[in-house]
Structures are given as C-alpha cells and as structure tokens.
Image (cartoon, rainbow, N blue to C red; front, side):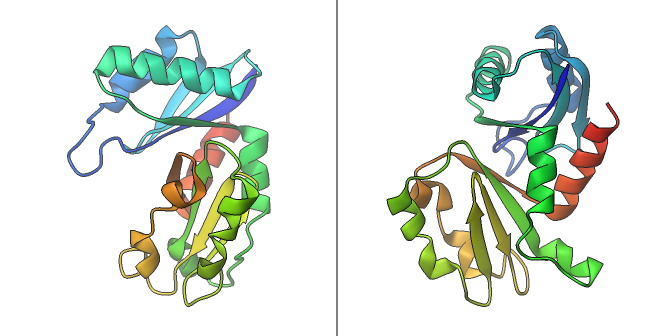
Length: 181
C-alpha cells in the first residue's frame, strides 16, 4: 500500500463548502482507501491506496466529493515520500521555532510553465519571500500572512495552476500522521 495525502482546497473556510471531517473520512473509506485519517477541519486527509497514479486519485476523489457534497473541490495529492522531500527541501530554514508560524507551502496541481515562473521573480526577494521548487511554492512572511502584500497576489492565476496552501505546522503534523500508517 502507498501512503498519500489529499490536500483539499477551500473547504471549511469563510463559511463556504462546509464538510464534516467524519463525513469526509467515511467518503474516503467508501472509495476503499485504507487507514483514513483527517487533520483539523481544513481538508487534510491521509490515506493508503494500492493506486500508484496520484492524478487518477485526485480525479476520483474530486468527482466523489462533487457527488457526495454537491460542490466542486479541487484535490491535490502528494505521496508521503513527496511530502518528506517538500519538508527536506525547505529553502527558508529558521533558527527560532516560533518563526515557522510565518512559513507556508502551496501545493500546486502541476508544475508551471517557464514563462509563468518568470512572473514569480518580482516576489522572490522582498521582506516577504517566495521560492518555487517543482510543484511547491514556499512563502516566508516577515510579519504575518494577513499583513503581507503577497496575501493578495493570485499565485494560482499567475502560475496557471490550481494550488492550496498550508502552514508549516500543519504540514509537519500531517506528515507525522502519515508516518504512523
């Protein structure tokens, strides 16, 4: 069995697309995925599957979410190995654990085209910094996400792909959960 993480975009935020985690877990189990676990209410699901094609998993899960809950939910899949590489590849290591509260990773559905990546250059080295590595966009905020001008940048449109962001703490808690399967 392969261990995967499904990152669901835009559920249980701002009063829209409300899904109870118990119902989400049951939906994954109905798809015959094993050891299904959720972490907090923002759409982080760890599960096992014999499938080896993440895009196929994302499509199946997204379709079932539509059928079950009545609205579209973009789903981005990473294997545990890919998530471990994301953690190891952090371009913004911090000395103070408290600083990690200002580090976020956006998981991209697809790797952006070279011309899209060029559009990212103006955002790489300010007070707030971003780095694109493969299909992940790392962002480190000097003060906080909500106080940053980057908060208003539509990176999904800029890069031409669906994405969903998680803070460093959530990312590591999900990784720890996945390692236990």
